[in-house]
Length: 250
Image (cartoon, rainbow, N blue to C red; front, side, top):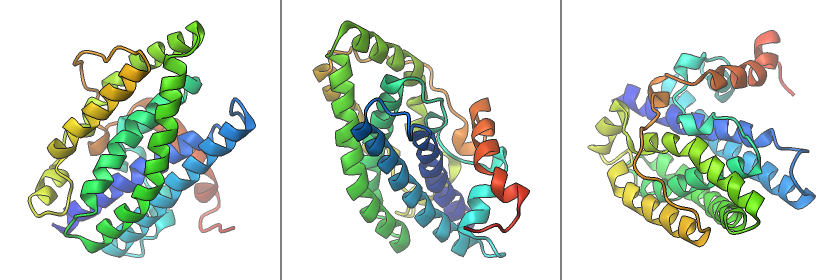
């Protein structure tokens, strides 16, 4: 059971770290200063969530593991993040849509994780939920603004939906460690939050005048360490300093 708990905690940490890193790539490149700061702060929130989960995973793992070693010294196959978190930023429409779809998932996910039988996971979820509530509001406003905006912004949002939608199915396909822990009241039962996510997405898409895609093929594998080539590029950049200068600290 301890192995399942470690894997689950790393899954949550990896989700937050990778999407946090992706959003950080916008720093200095946002469309306007206010939104540049907003996306950078969302990135910082996600990385802060990742730190909390990594610290807990390190305490469970022992063997000298630290939040830094778990973030910077594991290989691609060891990462358990959802594929949606690692896909390229694309343009502003793709980034904000990805954030909306993922934040809607996290919002309902953390609401359930607050009830976890694991007190540490519940505490991290309670803190994270406050941040994700803002992420969801911010990203949903952008989806509506672009979808119901100019002809070009609408076209870009429709293209973003086409690029991203197939990655949403994985959100609700449980890995073995999720299923095992859910029976113990530790992990979130994904079937509980799926209809809530679907309703939220449906409501926002309707306001954005964007057609909700029909059920499609679900890209999956991230929870088990099977990733797109993009994660390798992310880790090559993110892990370079620690691997080149082991033990380096600010």
